[in-house]
Length: 330
Image (cartoon, rainbow, N blue to C red):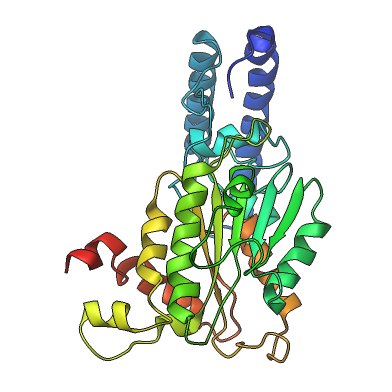
């Protein structure tokens, strides 16, 4: 993602003036709409506010033209860094617009991309999924197969491609993947090994070995399929809660991966009553469509819910779950 000097003058004297004209028209239409919906006797915005906004837009565009069109949203990246701003558009978000011109459209705020689901693109991405036999994982695969431009979808099988002690076979596959989906789950004796220890090792191996994809210059991405039941509060102190509870043991690692600057981590939270998505109130297809709806809007915590608990658990995930390193030090 670099500047092509061949288009410098076109950008300065064609694209930027056109963008300014659209901003002025949009501001004027917004002012007219605000005037029409404002109750009689109230003044929310005056004509002087409109002229001030237009004046600021003209000054900003003039300055950008003078500096060659390289404003704060146009930085040079080899790989687009992690975007930590949930509402404002920065260079991290806008850089991907130049990779996917019909996505990441907002120039100041992301509301438009939320509404239209243009805050994510599946094109040219290579997906690897572990746990493809699960009902939800199969539904996710079906959704990905419907997406235009997905490069490939690989399914890895436990016992054949990898096991809890051997990851050698998956490393070449992980190195040529862009998105790793951890959809496997276990409720047996190896629950912690499957849902936590192996998952953690797979994420770290993916982060370490994944090579930069020149046609998809984004960070490696991990989708972990969890459940509302992970957030149920067991008895005991903080350390005991997360080290002894099998279903909660991965959460501190998830919290650490969520803030890791070198990967994009998405935590998918399925309904706790849907242990078997084939017989749940809402089936796996509905759950997969719901998850994809959130992902298209750039969400990294993804509540797939019909109870609302997953939405509330977002605050637990962000503010109550300790980081894995912090837990180890207790």
